[in-house]
Length: 374
Ligand code: G6P
Image (tube, rainbow, N blue to C red; front, side):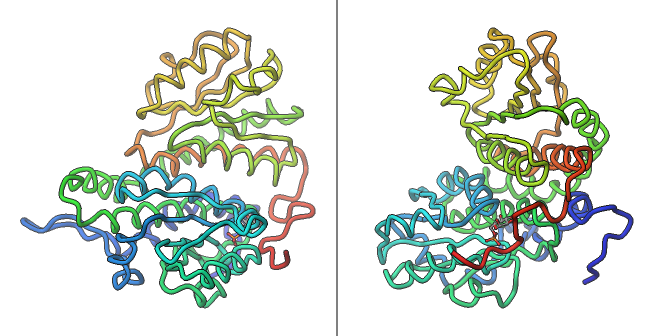
């Protein structure tokens, strides 16, 4: 594998733009298109001997840090839906701080790009001691987490150099969607839904190619926002994770304060911050939460909020209540895959903000690619 920037100026830029390819590599050989009588299905070789045990577990825990945690959060709803098993989220350090209960009947899924993050690794040792089935989802063959878990899936996104994770994030979500498909594959009632998701996965690299065309638009938005102090990002449902991850990208590389917030919590505090100056991104692509997000937009507009709404193609005039609002239209995909599309404009925004503000894109101050100490 070649590790160079090619025609790009920075690794982060290259890694954002190579996502159509990295997603393809992640899915290669894992999606089985059905013949005349054979249903479409998912094949995850590293899990096949453990699927029965996972299906019998009382709970699935997702454990990770940073972007890997956000990727798991994005996949949580589809895993809950297709498995019917309660899925709980754990930030590795917090699980260790609490010594939270873990049981033999649990499946603990460890998500880590590097496979070496100290907190995630220690949480893995803790889960092993408590007898849980431990599954690793990493981008690094032979890493500590890949070695210590009972089974797992490699995300195969290719080497990621930029400290801010981009292509690993989207590949992690895709792997966890495939995990949900594999666990749910014995349920006849969800067959149609699963096939629609598989079709969506096959189309995903093309959709990412389309959304990458927003590059110049996001650069212009970055020019408008570059002198701001702060940026809020509101999301919910499948895209709560997109809000957290978009804000994380902006703060870690552009060194601008940014917070991802659950839109359902808006009235419980964040609304007090709203005025005509603070830029607010609202993610309002079409899914079951769309009408709720429309009402969030109305409420922010009523307080003269400065809105940037991410919506589905053709929805700009539907979502924007008037001036002081601009729309970013993205292609519509299967709801559980929408976070993979929606994060891309925010990655581009963070990238351009960083370049314009004159900061180091690939090596943000004080941060490391892999945090191997507690
Ligand atoms: C560091 C990196 C992040 C990454 C996090 C977890 O903070 O800067 O980009 O998301 O560690 O890393 P992991 O390798 O476990 O995914």
